[in-house]
Amino acid sequence: MSDAKFVEFVKAKKLDLRRISAASHTLETLQREDRAIRLAKRRGKAAADGENRVEKETRKARSGRPVTGRALTTALAGGKLSGPTKQRILRAVNHLLVQKKQEKVELRTLF
Image (tube, rainbow, N blue to C red; front, side):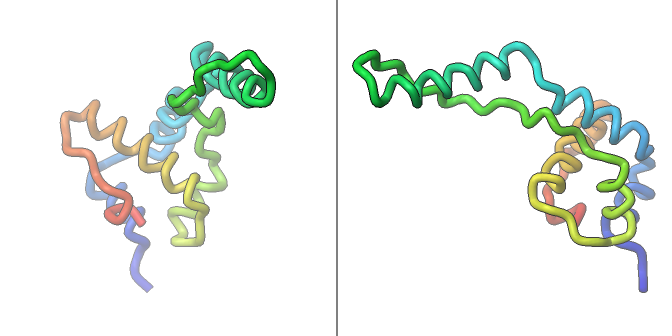
């Protein structure tokens, strides 16, 4: 069996798995603004029942979950990954490609 699409892409673009993991960690780590977004969403749900109407939060917070080493090895082996894990890998890879001044890719290109 030939290599997985992800392996071929990483080899072609000369990306290091350690850099993918580090980029994912920096992108997905919770920041103050993410915690504020989550708090606003909780308050919006609580205020929906009561008389204190608060505008609902529409922004989306980071997940707080970076790509794990196990997920990367599964992607290299061509195994099954969940949708959110694929998205995290995609965000990290696109971040590295932008740093290299290359075009961003779509999910279908990697998996």
